[in-house]
Every structure is written in structure tokens, then in C-alpha cells.
Image 1 (spheres, rainbow, N blue to C red):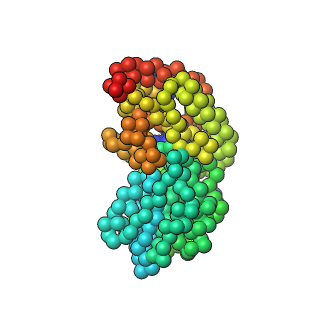
Image 2: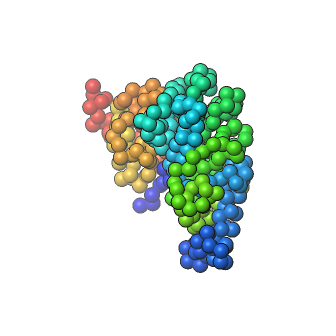
Image 3: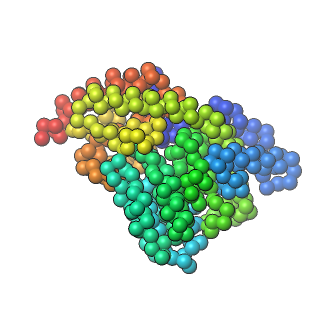
Length: 386
């Protein structure tokens, strides 16, 4: 059975060109970048080349990029680093109610240590209102953190507008761009952010490597201590193969972004229209226009999302019910609940995320398969009978 992979928001396969670029740094140019002999210096040069490639993807300076172990560490670094660097100024942090758990759990950690957290609500599309952010700011506010686009529903947030508010009020601004970096245009200066998180494995790079953009002059406390790597921002011997792969993935994404976004948008819209037409009592979650090119999130009434997911898997189709980082949980999505969906609607959600190797034939296969699964499950559903 040929499997159809439609969970690119959870992770992407490593691009063959990325893997090819990484391989020499496992067995040949394997030196420690902190050493002064040729093996080490070659590794150091490649790290700096990758730094340039990642910086170019988001319109940053090379020296503003710090490599991390992934998006979660980058989020932790941004929030904890900014909070503890500015606690003499205040203890108030603003975030949204639909952030990734990497941000929400870090905020909970900070809350237990005396920081006050305001969670801004969202509308029925999952959009944050910049005016709500403006009203939430106090004289003790030291950080705003709002994601660029939501990983579950694909809604793209008004980051530029929030960035202007942050600049006018002198508050540091972080955005989690794990789902947007390499997929839609991201320019740190146009967005007006001081801190931005990225992850390589979301853009056809390797797992275990990410980056935090830190605007020059932004106060941040390092929370991994040891050596002087990454300009003393993040201690520990660098993951040279991973960083090289991240750089190559960023370079490939930058050159082919617009064409790929256009292709995926067409496939996305075909899938959305087909699902809404062929399955009654179904709704699209997220904004119909202001959404990622590859994201389709639906709620199907009278059916459990987990049941649909398992049945799709039996048919060779890989999808998800939301965030991969919490897919083991049976709790309803906090994102969908924040948008106003009822628990039973949230439990009936399904997410398809498309990618580089998604074809029109695969979309047709989903449109043939899912309606049959839903009909079969509804025939057995106590939800429908009640």
C-alpha cells in the first residue's frame, strides 16, 4: 500500500539535498568548531555559512541568529531569557490563548516564579485583535509573545500590527515562526519583532536543530551555561551536521517559496472545497483566507477525530487531530476551544497539512476515502443517535 503523508506541520522529510550537505560533517569534516586546527576551523566556517543562510531567510543579520536544539528551546530561550533579563523593569507578559505548548508551558513556569501572564482571547477564526494587546499593556509589561501562524488551524496572525504597538510602547516582542519560516515570507524588520523562533525539521531540514533570532540590543539572559559557543548566548558543542542541514534547507526554501506556496494553496483549496461538499455537518476551522498555504483543519459533527484518524491510517493516509506535541492527549484542542467550539466539535477535528511531495492524486484519494469513513462511523455513532 502506497502511503499518503499529510502531516507536514508535525514534521517534514529531510530534503535529499539537505541530507547530502550534512553527510560529510558526520565522518569527514567532523572537527569541533572550538578547536584551532583545520578540521575544527572548517566546521566553524560551515556554521557561519549556515548562519548567513538562515539569517537571509528572515531578513536578519548573521550575528542575530543563535542556533538551538529546536523550536521548543528557542521559545524557552526567548521567554525565560527576556523575562529574567527585564524583571527589574516589570513582571508582566502578554501572550495569546492559542499558542503552542512550548510557549504556554513556559509561561506557566514563569507564572509559578512570580510573573503575571495575560492570555489574549481570539475570535472565531483564531485571530488575535491587536487592540486587545494594546489594552493589556501596563507599565509592568516586559514581553509580548504571539505566534506568527497557528500550528493547528493555520491562521496567520496580525504580527506587523502588534509589532508596531510593541515598538510604540517599548515592550519586547517575540513571535513563534516555526510554522511560517520557509513557507511564507518572513522579514523580521517588516514584522517588527525582537525575537523569533524557528525549527529546521518544519522546512525539510533535520530534527534537533532550530534557531532564535535576537534583534541587536535586545536584553536576554542565557539559560544554558558552559562554554562560549554562539557568542556566549548558548553553551555546548554545536550540532554541526544539523546546523549545516538547517542552512541548506533555509536556502532551498528561500529560492522556491512563492512557487511552492501557490501550488499548495491550490491543493489546499481543492481539499477544503471537496470535504465541505462531500461531508455534511462539517466546518472549516481557522480563517478562510488568512491561513497557511498548506493547512486544512475541519470539524466533523457526530464523529470522534481519533476514530477518523485511525481509519485513515488503515487506508494508508497519515493526518492528525492537531499538534503533534500533544497528540497522545485525549483532551480537546485548547486552540479550538479558545475559538468557541464546543467540546464535541473540538473532539471531531482533523488536520491535513500538505507539503513538497503532496500531489493532486493524493488529494483526490483523501476526498474519496474520508467521506466513506465518516459515513461508516456515523452509522455506529451514539452522538448522531442522541
